[in-house]
Image 1 (spheres, rainbow, N blue to C red):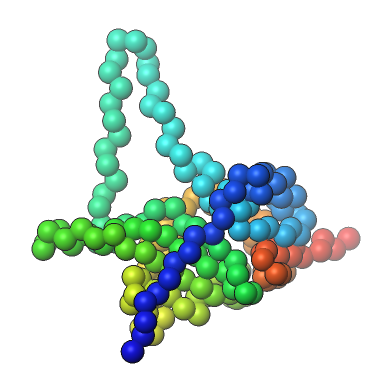
Image 2 (cartoon, rainbow, N blue to C red; image 1 turned 30 degrees about the horizontal axis):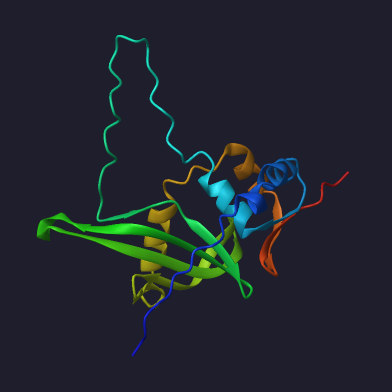
Length: 185
């Protein structure tokens, strides 16, 4: 019988994550970079803060944006943690079963590695838990939930283009090493 699962968030230390912008610049210019979890979390949270509503003048009332559609599973911003040669992607969310008037907080946690596929490097979880349910034991289910988690993450075009040029993605100690293919003269 399986025991409880544990979710520990990755660091979000502003001082350690400050190098993200410089490393992003280096990466998008075609250089290999080594990023730690603070920098990954700085990247994923950059641009996720809602912008203040804009007013067309003092006479117009500012209208609140409609709430996002609610699904059965909704997740917050992903969080990264790197330990023991493994990347963890986690998120806190809500299991919403309106039909039975149930709204319950839930945690998703996936640990794994990056694997080269036809479309480039993709994260492949070795373990994947939704709450205490081991989804990695159910074929295909883990990918559906992981897709749901990352569907709202907007990857900037410059990072997506640089990602396609990777020769390798590996974990080096407590950091993620993004190795770019050398440019041939």
